[in-house]
View 1: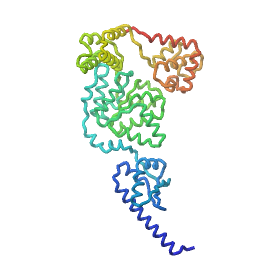
View 2 (view 1 turned 45 degrees about the horizontal axis):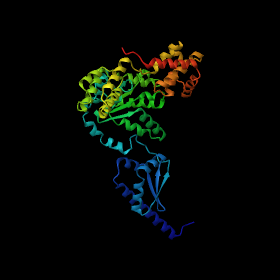
View 3 (view 1 turned 90 degrees about the vertical axis):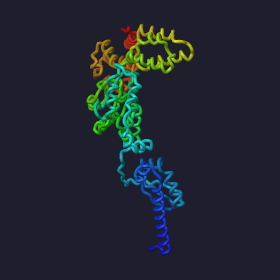
Amino acid sequence: MFLPLYDFRRGFIRLFRMSNLLKEFKSEIHKLDLSKTERYWLEQVNFEIDNESLSIFVGSDFVKSSIEKKLYKKIKKTFNISTGFKECVFVLDKNMKKDFQAYEFEEKNEDLLKNQEEIKKVQPDLSVFDEMFVGSSNNLSVTAAKNVVKDPGGRFNPLFVYGSPGVGKTHLLKTIEKAHPSSFYIDSESFLDSYIQGIKNKDIDIFKSKIRSVEILLVDDIQFFMGKKGVSEELFHTINYFLNNQKAVVLVSDQKPNKLLGFPDRLISRILNGLVTDIEKPDEEMFLKAIEKANVEQGGYLLSKEEIKKISGLRVDSFRDINGIVNQLLINKQTGKGNFDYIKELISVSKSGFVESVGPDQILDYVSKVFQVDKNLISSKNRTSKVNESRRLFASLARKHTDLSLNQIGLYLGGRSHSTVLSYIDKSKDSPLVIKEINNFDSSLSIKEVG
């Protein structure tokens, strides 16, 4: 059946008009002042105009979501201005195959990509290391860090720094970040969250691009990746990328590499192939420098020479201890209380003893000795009563005295699940023997003579 000539002509005119409107719309939208990111996403869609409505064809929900966030308002406004129409609808067309490039699309990181060449030309500023307190406890780590800043991807790659909490590991990473213009610091929690969100939102390449776009990557507290296979594998591939592209990686942990249970063997091998160094507790010289600096900042009125001499020999376990002492001295000054009683108390505590910090290996040694059970047996599949009791004691003490999660405690017990570890802890409450040994362990930590 043939259409009447009038209807045919009207349809042809309408089609011709829609075609012209589409050309005009496309012309106007390409004239817009769009960022590099916005132009990239614009290339991922097709447009059609029908029935006074703009159809935006996309190949996936991910593209639709990105267009909605970055371009939809501009598209709708341009469509309205150029055609007089307002309605815009998305149409999912899975036949649209687009090869997505793995780079960061966020605006804040686009600036980093734009200025990458300029950044490379900027010389690192090693003078920021002068702000650190350097002594025998951290000299090797600081020297290695300076080498990384001067020649990223050269020697000492990857650089692995370990030490107890509060000794200045994070401060060292922050100093490296401040010294080199193309560096990026990320703590373990942010790394893990970004990785999980990347998997969940199917845009993991955005996360990868962000951390791989710099010359020096700084990752803090990687011990919290223990037992997390996916993120530790991602860390391995990230390290490989940096090594293969003559870029530097600096990793920080409160555990030695061989104590990072649950990490892939090849990741540990990569770490050991670089430089492993530790930061120890601040020595007497570093403590004295910190006190003298605080005194200078207060115009010399925080402490007298005699008071500085009195506290110069105090034992401190971390820079957090030092900051705590300085803060108390500042409060004493501001309130007019004076430092006599406080300094007297500090000296008394230092002479009498100190509370010892505890690690999982120390707890394992204690449990092995108490039950006369070999440490390897504790992590084995053996289910005898004595071995199970030793596991309950270890789980309870590790939960009480360390920052290890239930999964991480389970790794020390032969890879047992968090629910099994929780069961050990619950059952220990009904065991007089375990309760007794928990109390004995706590008592042994309370005060220890300082040599």
